[in-house]
Amino acid sequence: MEESKEISESEQTNVEVTEKSSVPIEKTDTGSWAPKTQLGKEVKSGKIKSIDEVLVGRRKILEPEIVDSLISVESDLLLVGQSKGKFGGGKRRAWRQTQKKTMEGNVLTFSSMAVVGDRNGHVGIGLGKSKETLPSREKAKRSAKLNLIKISRGCGHFDCACKELHSIPFSVEGRCGSVRVKLIPAPQGTGLVIGDECKKILRLAGISDVYSSTKGQVRTTINAAKACIAALNKTGVRQ
Image 1 (tube, rainbow, N blue to C red):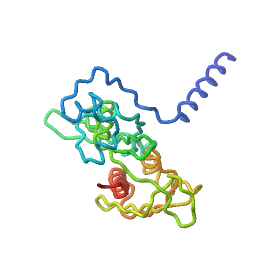
Image 2: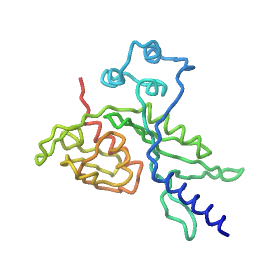
Image 3: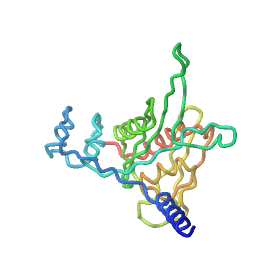
Image 4: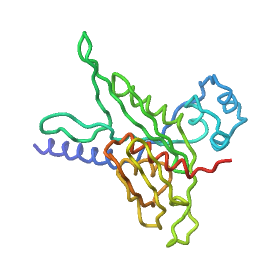
């Protein structure tokens, strides 16, 4: 009986460690990568050494290995679906399940939304769909890397005189569908005053303090995430 108690305690500690662990950093091997686009060939040869050259120059990224070879990004999944069931139903989960009626039966499809960022002003989201959960996650991560954007950070609040890049320089608003997300600069120590799913986007973008105002069907996580990205995109420096 004592051995079983020890095992259960160790399992509980392992679960706590995994839950409290930080978002893993994507480490992909780009050594065997054979680029197919002109941009990929320039990155592979070392002609382009910064991701800002690609984003500020508005060059289209068609290969996720371009992002992997220039910066180290972290990834996370947004809770876009909910579980089914009489007693456990309604809980948010990372996969949204849909089904299609056919002559052969029901065809299930799983959708997931991923966010990637380097916590230094670069962030992107992507949506992936597949008949299984893991392929949809990989598609979402790949799409998020292709949709990477550059944002500008700063300290735009009147009550904070620091010059650190902890918030946004000015108020911005983004819209997708019926959802409107307005981001407002905040002083240091405020934290992220916004929904949990948008917090993941702002953290990976490198923002630690912000106020927000939302309108519309905010529980539609996909539209809320796109509206948040649209607001962040308005802070980007355009040349």
